[in-house]
Image 1: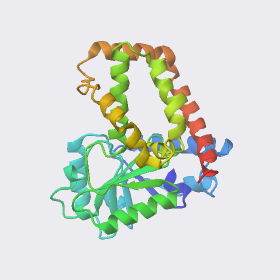
Image 2: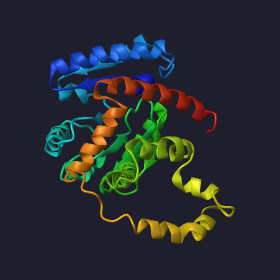
Image 3: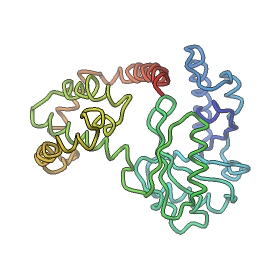
Length: 296
């Protein structure tokens, strides 16, 4: 949908015809729904965007004249390795292959391949139609040209790429997100805060700042002399509090804490209403994106 909104011709590939048929139905439904709500991205109408999207079960057809392939297969390393091995024998010189993975560093599935210099990660945040961030992560052998082409392509979609100079587990977003999740796990598991209150710290506090400013710019604005002054003033406090965090929680082994967190989360948003809550989130993000443009 993002690529079609920017007037690119798109081919969707899957090994199952049933998956492609379902995707086609969902795309039709979603594009027209966005159009009716005035939230459709790009200058083309929904029907015009849909006309740009084709479907195929043949990798040989997928790669013809392709300038960019966005790989979105399940997060199974062996499956990715198999797919990239197949693509390696089909790609021309001008096709960049970008994975949407949030888990695997690109070196894990591209090492040893003939076209490995054309492979990288372009990790979007969910839902990417409403959240513009894309993390571009090169493998050690990815060319600078492939990275720059991907950056420019993301900008042409209206996305906001960030460039990791080196690959690292978890990339940037998940490393920061996991640090937050680990601490809220501790706070709930220790009985210090409820799920509702610990989430309110973000939704009614830090998140309001971070919707406009990053954590470092926030610190920069929070001291008279900027970020250097901030860490001079509060650096010892940051170190002292950080030293109390303790070991990283084992979120799979701590079944009691997980059960309690799940109970409270499901009381706040019952499982049968998750779809409705996601729709509310997406509507909010649509309006927030419009508001943010006024401050860019």
